[in-house]
Length: 635
Image 1 (cartoon, rainbow, N blue to C red):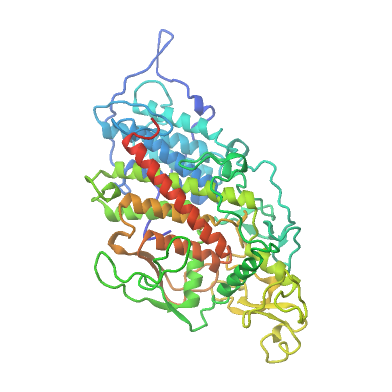
Image 2: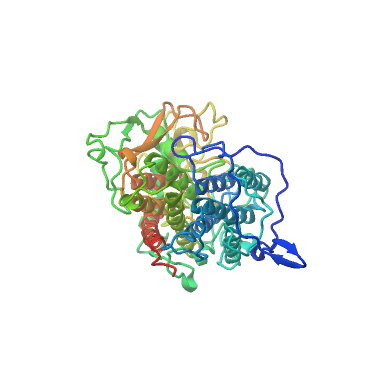
């Protein structure tokens, strides 16, 4: 998470969740009189004591936080969680908009009146949120705890769980109707929710890569290869019994989005063209160069190296879209003063960046990560909450429901756009690229041994041919004696035996044994590479936060997070506290994308293309959301 405490869930109580079967057609439960069902008119309930934790939170914020908790417990499928974030956000928006004369709903476009509009909105939002989330997480990992948290939140706000009617003008009935619409829609939106979101007919073309063994065999070196791990633990820290990865979401490009164009028969709503490919005359060299770039980043992950870097916003950030051409910001626009330098160990910075943005064990995954950030930004701006930075100040509930609609519409679209490309191009990950090419040999000099036109390019000090001379005692490849004629790379040596007290360090290793800077039980995500989900999610969210707040800069012109010395999980480190700081939302988004190269998860093409399509998603979502705010969209 970014920033300080993201909020604690309400205390848990043991309970039996209510039955959810048939929620899309909720039965009317009114009052039985002479065999007839009579719907009670809405009567405001007696005042309920304020919820004890975070009394300043709006009801929408409470449900967003409850969903983030559920995501942290569940299996890490960013596609599914971004969809749930959006569907919750749209349901809450519809409940709020029903009591506004201008706004239009997304799933439901009803208009109701109430003597106490705030109370009616809170109630309608809660019933809609409770039923949507209970339906979505009833079969997920951690379901008992998640459903209990949802029910506890309803109890804390004095909303009875057994009010299931969908008829009448009560806020509860409105919320139940909205939930029924969302749930029914979710069964027809292309996600294949009814079958556990499985991708119909997808099979990887390559056999699994066994991480514990050197090298790899590939049928097609440009296509995704699942990993086989003896001890596999998901990105959220959940043990996985099947040791071979199963691809997540290759069909997701055909899921119904918010502001995306129709994907058509290809399942690709935004197509920037293919990633570089090995053996393709136009892009073969780019493919090889980008693999070498990942090795180069891996070679810097050594805190014993004295190299330093200034990571302040005065030195990093300010990139143009889809590039790393920025050299920081001259001054903080809020204070008018230059940003203070922040010089740290380069190896520490790379390791911290890779692990922080990895959204690792028990995380809210990248789309949820940006909800955490957005909530913290909102807290800093409150109570001066002006949508798009102009006009009158609005209350926190209006701010939150409008922000969530735009933000989570954007990250939902980002998942569809990125995974549409993943499914269509089915592109390879760096671990397969480097091991495969390294196993073939070197492609730089046909006069040297081990030449193969699809091998790794030689790069002195980074990618080298092992020879009898280089393996002589005291020479740089001495530890690789017996592997003459093979390819060595100078890179991170892999996970240490005791990550609490040891570091892997950087040394010369066989290219065929290289692993990314990740947990040994995870290694690489279970889906194709191109385009980077982190980059797409992050840029989409940054575009919305910039438009919604009316400023590209964080409140105060700076934000960040401190990673304490010795707190890393992948290995021992960092050696000192490291403060990741960003001037703008775009700077934070770019760093999220860059981190995936340092972590060995992506090549530059995955990152830079992800940023560009993420920008399209974010801008389109922000524009469309404003149409729902003023009633010009969805009517």
